[in-house]
Length: 349
Image 1 (tube, rainbow, N blue to C red):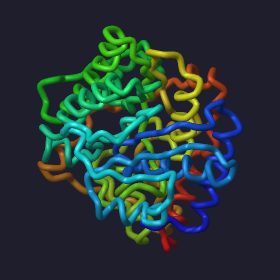
Image 2: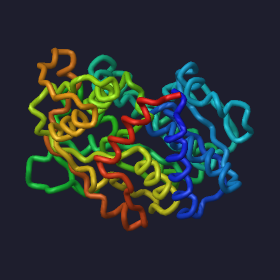
Image 3: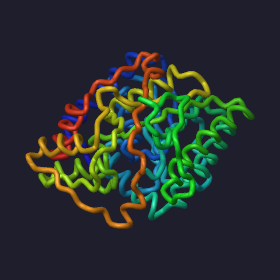
C-alpha cells in the first residue's frame, strides 16, 4: 500500500498540527503494530515532523509481517531515523537500545479474528502487553502508551448518553468474542500495576471505532467492508438492521489525539478518543457510503462464523470532554472523512 499524493498532503497537515502544539521535539519512539491502521500513521507523522521541522525523532517500527512492512514502509528503508524490526510481541522483545516512548498498538482488531483466533487475541493484549511493560521497565522508558478500546465499556443498557472514562457497561465474559474486550481490560490493569509497583509512567488512549485510508482491505470490521465496497463501486452489504449507534473517528484525528495524550496527558490516566462530529448509526453510515459510491444498501444474513465475531453492543458513544481539555479538537466530520478515505483508496499509487 503506497499512499498517494492526497494522503501524503494530509499527513503533512496532521504532522504540522501535532508539532506546533506539543512540546516533545525529539526522542526515540517504539511502535508495535506499526503496519496497522493507526500504527502506520504514527510512523508517517514522526517521519514527516523530521522532514518538515528538523525534529529529532527516531522511529522503531515493530510488526510480524515483513512483506506488509516492506509494502507500507519501503520508502523509509535506509533512513537514519527509521528502523523496522520483525517481532511477535508475544515473544520477548529483542534489545533495540534506548527508547523514550513505547506505543503498544499491536492487537487483533478484526471481528473474524476474535472468533478464529481467540487465544491469539487474548495473548497479544495480555502476554504481549506484559512483555512490553517489562521491557519498558528494564530500559527506563519515559512513557508507556497502551492503545485501548471502546470495547472495554461493554453494553450501554440505555441509562448513559455517552461513556465517560469512569463509566462501564455490561460485558458477558463467557463468550468467545469477549476475549478481546476482557483482555483489553486486563491490559489496562497491567499498566496500572506496573505504575503502582515500579513507578512507570503510563497513559491509556481508549479509541472508538477508527477508520481511514490506512485500513487494510482484508479488515473484517463492518465499516472497513463498507468502505471496500464503496471503493469497488459495489452495493454496501449490511448484515444487521443497522440500529447500532457508535462513535467513529478518522485515523488522522485519532493519531493527533494520541500525540496530545503522550505530550500532555496525566500519568496513569485513560482518555476517550472519539469525535462528536462522527456519532452515527450503522444504517446511516452504510447509506452515506452508498451515496458516495452511487450504489445501494443491501441486507444479508451473516453466517455462523461471522456472527461469532460480531459485537452485541448496540450503543457505544464516547464522551471526549477529558481529551478536549488537553487542547485537542477533531478536524474531520464523518461525511468528509468517508469521502476522503474512498477517494484516496480509489487512487492508490
